[in-house]
Image (tube, rainbow, N blue to C red):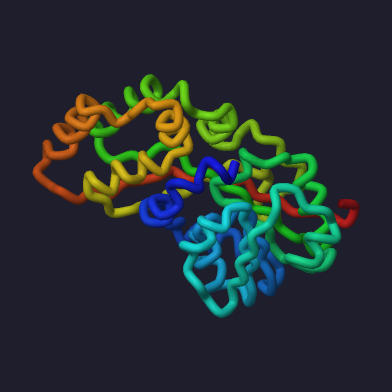
Length: 264
């Protein structure tokens, strides 16, 4: 998975949305204490930075050092480049001891994981009872009907052959992803719960966001340019129709959240 994001690490850090504070406030309200978070697949630290405002310490891990190089450096955030597979002893050495973490977060990454192995690690490292796991994804961007119409044709037809199968879990808003945890207090299900992330973009930024896709990189590796002159022109016409160069781009965010019990 990490290899898909090496080439576009800078693009990823610059164009991916920051997650809404409402998301983090909701998650934090479900963890009894706010001492330590493990942010898995932290990438360039989009989630870790927000978590650091609420929790005393955050450990952000990723298998891509290049992505971590673009992460914001904060005194209470420790970034660790890890191998794709880790033993329990490696987790204890690099991240935290058993039953010591309040919250495990995974932002736009869990669909890439070996879930049975990962969930065993989560249950090992979370405090018991009531340690919380929160995983979320965001789906396709929304701007306005004209732009979204061009985007949908591009996404569902042009780019579709180059997405990995795991992308289906995102398109389905994590509804079908295996999630063997108990509902957190005050909620009678584990989600998905919808939030919205927003980012102000111009057209160049919008194109850079598309170029940060794993599908774009896969197509490029096969000698295929998804953003052809014709596609670029279709987007330009739609984007410039209202005469405004910058627009609010909305990304629907879908959260799965649960807790471990004494038996986990």
